[in-house]
Length: 215
Image 1: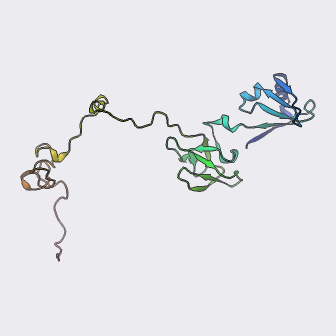
Image 2 (image 1 turned 180 degrees about the vertical axis):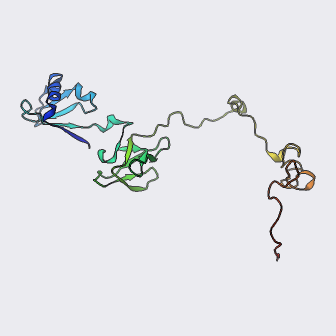
Image 3 (image 1 turned 45 degrees about the horizontal axis):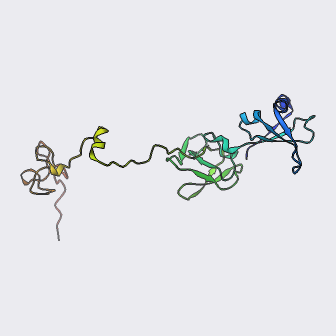
């Protein structure tokens, strides 16, 4: 989990939080908690833990809410365990190479260390990746990419797709595979096999190798 600690230079931020927030006391907790709209705008969780001497100190602890960062690209070292990610780099600065198909995601299995991070890919393979590599949080969108069933041939015509006719079903003048008796696949025009309009064989060409002795 990414943690950010405010230093002494951010006393103005602390004053804004105290001025625009509701500080409440929870008896079952040992620390005072605040519900702040300012922290929510900064993509932090609305619950901010304040130290005991909050009035005289600016030592504050913010918890990054990983769920509010969907679509954000960051290094693996800044993410926490079980986070769903996609578009993962294999080398730092290379660009997303893994988990880019619609509807797919990978999971971080162990807390990222300084050097590398263990990630489970959609195929089930567990792979160690450099923690400096970046990834995008969330799942690859898949809306609108589902296959649509065509109920009649006219639906393809509406899309501008014309019917596809096999070459063996045509006449010799229309296609090199045309002609022959019945469903012939090799006779072609005049029984010479498939030919181009100039009379050259279309499937295998002419035999140029040496004649081999057959058993």
